[in-house]
Length: 95
Image (cartoon, rainbow, N blue to C red; front, side, top):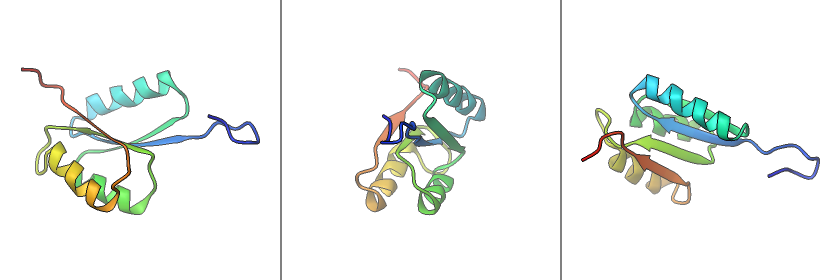
């Protein structure tokens, strides 16, 4: 998407994952897919809520299994304050 001046719109993504190696890989993948992605990573749901309160994001990507608060609990907390914010929940664990 471009604005009227022809500049690309930045897509701000908040990535919440306690595994920093995986977070780095996700950031690299998103950047390769589209250079408009501007990804910020935090390592806990509580840090994610703090960042959402401090800044504006277009989307949240969250791991399911995290210490303290899991991804579903984090999603519920996000929905209370930002009901329309797109939210992607994933897990690296398979059953």
